[in-house]
Length: 372
Image 1 (cartoon, rainbow, N blue to C red):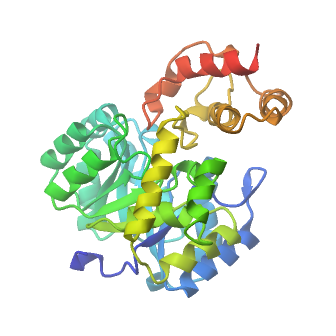
Image 2: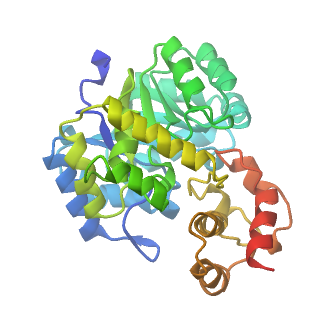
Image 3: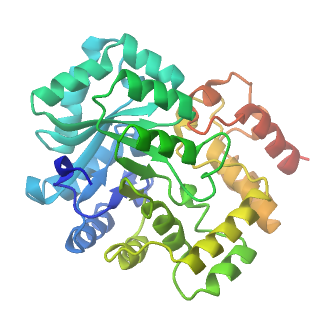
């Protein structure tokens, strides 16, 4: 990988979006065990953003990592997210607050978060890219990049307009590789044409490539006793130009599993790749809702509908046919929150969805399944 990323150790990173939680708070004891195991195994890349876990992720980074390790022991990425600024003058104070929350004097990587055609226009009008480059010149950012959720032609436009971008974070996994909405392969190819190192998010597609249907589990079981996550993460990490694959781990068991095959990384062999392609064909044939549970849609929903949870419940029922999902929908997910049928079709969720899902229509499908 490029020489200016010499501070990054290995190609596996800790995504701090799905940390162990107790109610609305991070379970520090568990997070510390996970972070210590991660660093002891020779990894050092941590990824966060201000909105992760309702604002708790950055705070936990300070309590559990930056206050316990010397600055050279870890690489930290944070992001500038659209809801937290409305004009250029807002950006520096927000950035400084992020440094304080994380307990650091600089970020190794700072990304313009969740770039799409719409958000890019806001970032341009507020001169967000220019402000970030100024912060880099001042030494408060070591490397400048973007995270991206849109079609390949939009990424082409951004990289052409801002060649100063050093790294691009994209959604990439074996199910989304040829997906016509996510366009993982096409976005990856744009990065390669522009010579940009790639950071991969959602390699296990929000857990969907871990909690597999039985027919998929059977395919992997023929290969041995490695976890489903191992094939998904190694698939993503095996592509040329991939600087980092992020995994959003939420307990120590997941951490140790990931370390077991990424500490001495080996790409998928021919037999493993054939198995992955079989599993992908099964998934694409099920017409599941491709929600990654980023939860960006939840905070802005005026009806307080737990959209990702309802989609996950729907997918589980469609995949496994379990009656338990009806009980879970009625007594857990919608007892104190809105039902799918409560949607007023305001469209706020679709505007912010990185997957560009037609959420209003999909909620109608969920209502038809669970509210007969």
